[in-house]
Structure formats: C-alpha cells, structure tokens
Image (cartoon, rainbow, N blue to C red):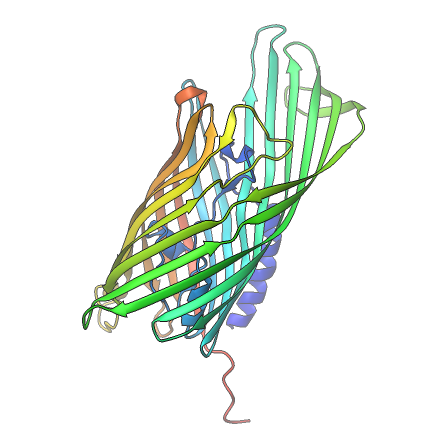
Length: 416
C-alpha cells in the first residue's frame, strides 16, 4: 500500500511544485525568493531542532540520519499559512496552501538511502504604488515561481552511536516577474517581463553522534555542512509599450527586441550545529545554531542600490515530551507534545534595515494504532520584517501537516 501512495504522491508533488505560489511575501522579490523550507513538520514544531537519531522519521537536514532508519519511511508534508502585511499606512492579508516536501528513506543494513523533492524557495508578490494625482508615476509589480530541490543522500552507521552521510541536490526552477509603469490619466504604459530559468547542483555532508551520560540520559549532537555552490540563471527580458485598463489587463502596442543573458550566482558554505539532551522516547530538549557568510545574491532583474546581502544566522531551541510511549490503555499518553522558538537573521538588508524572522512553534505527533506510522500537526506564530524605513512587516500564522508512513520492504518470502 505504501508503494502506491509514494508513486501517487511523487506525481502529485512534481506537478504542484511547479504550479503553486508558495509565498505572499514582498521580500520574495529579492535573491531566489523566500526560502521557506524549514524541515519536516516534526522538526518545525520544535523550532527547527532535529538532533535525535530517529528510526521512524526522516531528518531532511542531515543526510547522516538516513543510516538510523529501521523501516522504509515515506514522508509528506504541507502548510496552510495566513499572512498579514502592514506598513506605516496600510495593511493587507493573504492566504496560501502549499506542499512542502516529499521524501523516501530506505534502510539497507548499516547504510541508509534517502531521496525526494523539496520546493525550496518561492516567489509570490503583488505590489502596487498608485496615485490619483494627474501626471503622477504609478507602478505595479508581480512575481511567481521559485526553486526546487531533488535530492539523493546516503548515510552510513560507523558505530552504534556515530553515523556519517552526504547528499547531492539538483536545483531547478523558474522565476517570472512583471512590472508595469504608467502615468495617471494616460492609458498607455511601459511593461517589463523577466524570466529566469534556474539550475545547479550543491552538496551537503553531515555527522550525528550520541552517547549515554547515565543509564537513562543521552547526549545527542548533529553537524551539517553545505559546500559552496553556484546557481546558473538563463534570463530573458521583454520590454513593451502596452495599453491597460483599470483591471490591469494589457494589450501590447510595441515590443523591443528580447534581451538574453546568463548569470551565475554564488552561494557560500553554510554550517549548522545542533545538540540536545534527553531520555529516548520520553523527552528531549535541544538547540541549533546556523551560520552562512552571505546567503543571497541579486540577479539581473532584481538588483537594487538600496538592497544588500549580509551574514545569515539563526538560533533555535525546542524539544518534545511523550508521557508514556508504550501505553496500551491511554492514547493521549502516546501522543508526542512538541514546542520551540527560533530567531533568524535572513541576511537580506533593505533600506539599511536587516530583515529578521522570529517565531514560536508547537505541535503534536499522533501515532497510528497498530503500526509505526504517525501523523504530525504543527502551528507557528511569527513575525518577519519591520515597518521602519518604509518597509513591510509580516505577521503570520502557519499550520503544518505531515505524514510519516513506515513499512518493512525487501522481506524475503517464506511461502510461495
């Protein structure tokens, strides 16, 4: 049954990852868009902390974790988000439903293999600057698309408490933007269309180690390092004179020759370190820190003199609690209760202001009776950006749903 689910889900996510508009953030205009992947639903519910060597959940942020799987694991997750955008003078709201990841993990003795597809970043904004004054300049901007990652990783268990891993990501996607500029009272304006076809490869290496401090208490650690990488962009630009109406439907009057260019965007290495302490299958509390010298870079169409890219840094704290993992009489005692907080300095600097993101998370893991599979629910309340310097602040509420379905494959039949 799980094999049929995997095939169906792979086809569905392959289609949706191209079609979905996964963000409503105006900051998705910059770089490669709004980087929204933050791990599985279980990890996100703990502020992004995922340090334990779990045997029935996939850790998509450290390939060394694949070596710890005991059953074939299929993971699928999505998010419903509401976002309130406000400036000094105005506020708007938006809603989005997205698929976040699809992954499969295969245990092969001391070796574990993981593969899947992740919609990594999204572009999705509509911004208007309108004036009723005659002869005033007006602008309307919009953008869609994003970057996807198809990954394949291998983990190897060196000892019972130490594992190593590496994965390769093929990055691909398409970003389309449109800008319309016109004068109040004049039905003719100028439109610019930009398209960027993205492709590239990057590599990650990871390690996980755990050791018993006492009979019940265990120390967990995790290290992940993303190597420096490049992302190639094939750009096209079309500038035309158009006639528009109040609904912004346009008819092309005159078109200039199409401009083509190629840009290579460089992304420096990134390192993240996690550590936690707890009692396996009972409770855990841990933290995570991550650092990257410069996480973003402008393309031809979104370079701006008032925008820069600085250092990325994030800090997370989170954990879980299970009242009684083996309880037969009480289902609530087998539920996993999760919580966490996080603070992220995105590295994006607009009008001299650093765009930061912070949130509080909580969640529940509901085991499916009779099997090792589970359903995970999470909620995140957060804030991104600021209203200072004419910018936009985002106040968001996100609900995540994840499935971790487990089964035993490659079992030799004893009867024909």
